[in-house]
Every structure is written in C-alpha cells, then in structure tokens.
Figure: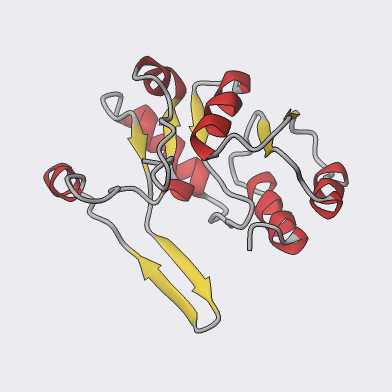
Length: 168
C-alpha cells in the first residue's frame, strides 16, 4: 500500500542504510500527500541531503518522475516507490556494475513481491538478447529496482506520460 506510513518508513530506512549510501534523496509529492506520510519524511534522521518536491496537483507518474529528475544532482539515479524495500547492498552492486560496464545505461534486478498470500519472486530476462525479445511486449525491468545514468535518460527525453505505462 503506497499510502502506508510504515511501508514508507521501511522504504526510506532501506535507502539510508545502504552499504554505499546515496549522496542525495529526492522525494516527489505528486499532488496531495497525507500528513502521516509527511510526518515520516519530516522525522527522517539522516545526514543525506533530502530534496522534497511538492507538486501542486497530481500530474501522473511519468511527469512526476521527470520533475524529480530535474533535482537529481548526481550521475546515477536509483528508482524507488514508497512501498519498496531494497537489499542493503543494492546500490553498491549496481554502482559497481555501471562503473565496470560503461556501455550500460540502465540496469535492474529481480524483485520479491509480497501480498496477503506471501511472497513471490518476479524474475525478468537477464541477457541482452532475451531483454530485447521480452521488451517487444512487456517492460523487461522491475522499475522499482532500476538504477540508471541520468544524462543518458535525459538525452532520450526522460520518462513518457502514458496511462498505465509511465515507467516503461
């Protein structure tokens, strides 16, 4: 549930407690946000610079992500939602991979999804050819696990605003 203060707190803690801490956290409030979610963000105890962008109205995920990108000051951007928790070494592994593979612009991981019935792993293709084939019909990346080179994403126009496909 993206409106859960508990999930948001866990999500932010998973970012703050990375083995390679981020240099900046950008949070976009896409229109109205509950006081309970604001309280979680306001109570955050971290030395990491925190940029909060309040949009006057809900503009949709694609546009909100593009607005957030304007405030990202560093080369790499890691994507998260309010109800996502990342592995404590996620940023370490992803940054190392991007540094060792300069031809790679974007990467993601498998994810574990939790619901009332428990947990399931959502795996996607991992080889270049399999990713290209899969991309013909579906997004080959778990968006909440993506890290990318900001400049490369901006060169292609950033995120698109398409109903139900904002993160593709």
